[in-house]
Image (cartoon, rainbow, N blue to C red; front, side, top):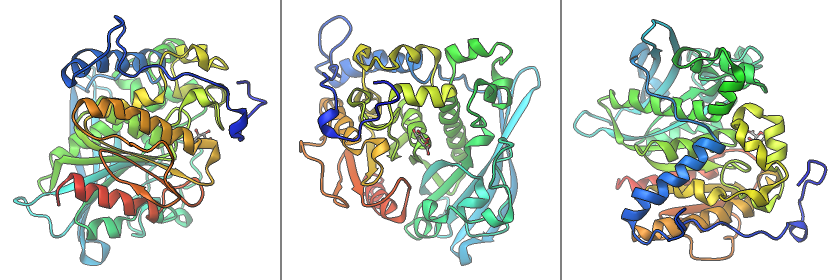
Amino acid sequence: MSKKEVIYDEALVPSYQLPSLLGKSDGSSAATAGEWLSTRRPEILAIYRERVFGKWLHRPQIQWYETLSVREDALDGEAIRKEIRIHLGSAEGKTHSFDMLLYIPKTATPEHPVPVFIGLNFRGNHATTDERDVAMTGFGYEKNQYLNDESRGNSVPRWCFRETIRRGYASATICYHDICPDYNDLSCFRQSVLSILGSTDDLSLVHRNYTAIGLWAWGLSRGLDCLESEVLVDSSRCAVHGLSRLGKTSLWAGANDERFKLVISTDSGCGGAALFKRCFGETAEIISTAFPHWFVEAFAQYRGREDLMDFDQHFLLSLIAPRALCVASATEDLWADPLGEFLAAKHAGDAYRLFGLSGIESDDMPAADEWLTGDVSYHLRTGKHDQTPEDWAHYWVLADRIFQK
Ligand code: GTR
């Protein structure tokens, strides 16, 4: 579909056929969880690494954590708050760092460590919390317009730290710009973590192999590494979440790093949970033109040629199986194609069933604000493109179920 024809009418959605999730490249189908894990899943992961989000960067040779601050009386005495600098280093002595903000309920003990949510933020750690003494982050992006006191706390409803803590969960966040600044061209890589762990001398080579979404997702894994060293946090019960481009990112993090046991995408849309082949709202062409650094060069072959895709986003979601998946949409977020997100979640169910788990059985989307809660979960929140307390209400219930609280 070309850029001029953004489709917002179901009657204009082209007819398409979804590629078979279980059909292996040798023509047979994965019939067991074992075959899925040994053959089909690696094939799908390879498709995404080669043609969509790029290679998964190696783990740095040197990684250490510097505690920048600790408050024992955070959130009116209900939480311990930490700011931790995650340092990554290369053998040649080059370093890159980003800062994680972490809240832990005061009820956590080393004997009873708590499960944890982790997600990247858009504006800086200081925007996610109403505590005004949290250090500003997000300096990785020079054009970041939220690097000021007025922006403190302006994303609080997206984070809901207080309620998360009350419910017995720790919660961590890092500003995505500090991993790779989100400039709309390939120059972003020069100031990214890739500049020390790989090479950014030849940007066209970088574009062949790496993407900003890939680096952000990988940064979430480094955040989880750091959480593994926190005695009050049970990092084996970790949920990763993200909104919009950061929801595409949380899905890709969950696809690559099996330590994420619950993977949540909110309004992730095109390149996230939404099926490309429906061409409803944002399309492969639109997104890869506006954000060339989000996709590898090979993805360009699908601009206006979704029919050539031998995959679609139910493949991406299936990489989370058998771990818990939650896809969330919003009624007014047509750009992200809520129905396409629902259908991808539904079709990912074939992978879950191989594990004896349930997918989404219904062919129809649930009513707005109704939750489908299972191994594959879905909801359609009333409202705009955002992550709100209403979204969190489902995430907490899901986490309670999965982490057996
Ligand atoms: C839009 C983009 C979407 C989504 C969104 C966001 O401009 O078209 O795919 O990622 O940005 O991240 O807020």
